[in-house]
Amino acid sequence: MTRSRARAAMMLSLVAEAGDPRLVLWRERCDPLELWQSVVRGGAEIPDRWHEGAAEAPRQADEALRRADAVGARWVVPGSPGWPVALDDLDQLEGIGQVTGAPLGLWVRGGGDLTAIASAPIAVVGARGCTTYGAESASDIAADCADQGHAVVSGAAFGIDACAHRGALLGGGPTVAVMACGVDVDYPRAHAALLRRIAEEGLVISEFAPGAQPQRHRFLVRNRIIAALSVGVVVVEAAGRSGSLNTLHWADQLGRTTMAVPGPITAQASCGTHRAIREGKALLVTSGRDVVADTFGLVDDGLPHVGPAARRVWVRLEAEPRPAEQIASALRLSPVAVHRALRELHGHGVVSVTEAGWSRSIALHAAPGRVD
Figure 1 (spheres, rainbow, N blue to C red):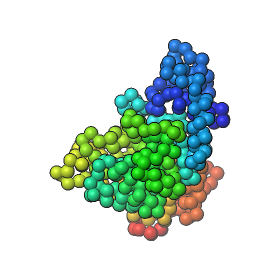
Figure 2 (figure 1 turned 90 degrees about the horizontal axis):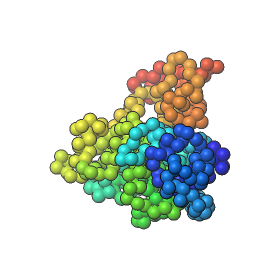
Figure 3 (figure 1 turned 45 degrees about the vertical axis):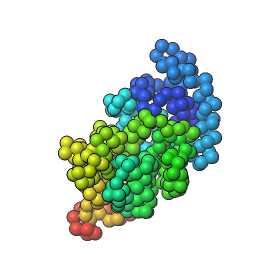
Figure 4 (figure 1 turned 135 degrees about the horizontal axis):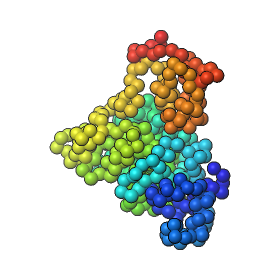
């Protein structure tokens, strides 16, 4: 996307509320620059709020860029090299509570490669007021997922979210905090040090401009980003009306793997997760190993130690050669990430490449570490 279109998308994000389903309809008709020009002109089809905000949007965009620069953040838009294409799935949904659609762009704080980190991440979410049991479970699951090469996505809130981020960092893997405010806003304030560390070793992202303060409805809006970024979502402790169940519902609509950790049958903190398991809306998991197995079906497959993206690509490969671009489309990964994964697999001698494309070159068996 050109710089002018990227800036137009930025200004649109300042006048239109994130997740507004009208943005999906407009994106089907025109690109961000054309839509922005229509917003500036106004008219019967343009919401009054959008048109009224257009005059101030250029100044607000400049201020957002200044604040972003101060924390080393950048604006990433659909179609750019750093865009996680899995988010595009949101444009295909009816949505939840009048919210749907992929974001117009993302503010990304941190030095990590968003497409690489988001190649096969696991979301770990749950109650803010968690128990010791929940905190330990979230930390252990996140650490296990990180140890197996998966980034961990969560919302940086008190409770389960913070434990998930810390567990991932302890496991040596990157973690992604999806914010309901600007990426330069330390929310909650007590997590300022944690957010700095996440930005150093992973990423802090948001569709809300730098400087934007958290608002209650924005937490539910950002949940769709957590779900769409991830290939699997696990909820650790959720009461009957917990917001983390909203993330699970988004994941279910998106076709992601949905999982929940059971708690004591008498615990109110787990009644939401128990209901999700009982109603078949979530698989029961008790460890990071369960999470990875249920999401990827790759326990003890004999594949050499490779990254999560390479494992996802391996599952899609067949005896008949297929072009890398076709594999990328099937997996909703960027061609760059797929080519990187294929080179990794090729280095282990488990795939072959011809003019027709890529294919498996050997059969792997279930014995751990065994390659025939």
